[in-house]
Length: 102
Image (tube, rainbow, N blue to C red; front, top):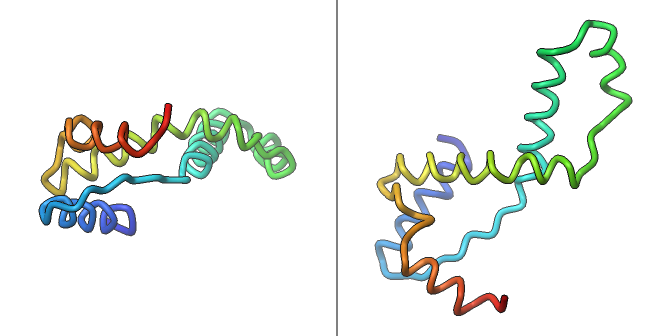
């Protein structure tokens, strides 16, 4: 499963022990950059791929694209460790609302 899978397993164990957990992740930029590079790679000529190294996508664009992919990844990983409804637990949502001022 890798590091993220291990993190999800540890969070699931904490939740099973009654510990409230809020997951804050900063991987959206990396996931978005990977998606953009992949899309560029499959739709480019060799010449364009050579020039791709010179033109890195903006971090904000990467984060915007990567956020949905990151959430889907966490959703799939939590589903594998036995918590398919991790993001929809009312306890999790209530805890978030109590801790974060909107």
